[in-house]
Image (cartoon, rainbow, N blue to C red; front, side, top):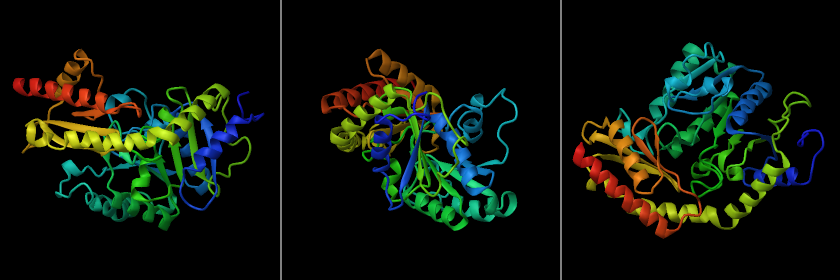
Length: 357
């Protein structure tokens, strides 16, 4: 029994501190899980329970987890879904606003109006009546999809559409939350208020903990409707409280400051390197998209992979994201000396890869 039968002091304390980071006047409630995918599973159940509807809408490129419900929402790589048979019914996917590859040529803060129009005039009229949609889930900064920030206006309009139809707006902040973008939550950059939020990963500095945070009027399931054995166990809660102190007192601001510092260093890379197509992100969640040709924007997964391998050999750990993007997701405590090393090393690796292109 970790905390759902007999409560211990640290669990409600962490819940109280988490909900205090959320905007809006309405009280919030928190449910603790063991992971991000578990938080998403719970969010699906909660959206269905609160609305008495069963349809869900997610976005292409998104990653929400690998358990059956969250996998039904995931649309990042086919290999993640292959071989598992039928998934959750009543799930539809729509395009994510990807400014660098916007077919209409819109910029980072204007891309996506046509997607919202497709949602209202195609999805809602031809596939799902909005009165049947329980929730729309989105990553404010798409993670596995390539570190692509959703434009502020897009999130604002998505909230408006959800409010209009009584649909739960679910934000997956498993990768982008807990100070990563310089704010507690990435959605704060757009000034919106979700109905349900999912958190994990950075919430306890690597210990297995996740959380669902929702408006009190939404999280009203009866006792026994949802539960967990080990979610919110006291060891992970202690790690989360210590993590919270560090982020609150120092590292959230450091993520904002060091994010600005790194973006300043990377700002001219699309001019400096012919294989760098785009540099984007928020705070310490930075994506560098590698292309074969800046004019055609042909994706260069092989060059991206070569750069990742070269960086490893030079002592810099980076990962890929999407088909051809390098993700920079350093610890929130990163200092200028470390940022300088990362930028310098990546420059060397990109230059080497570019010579072989």
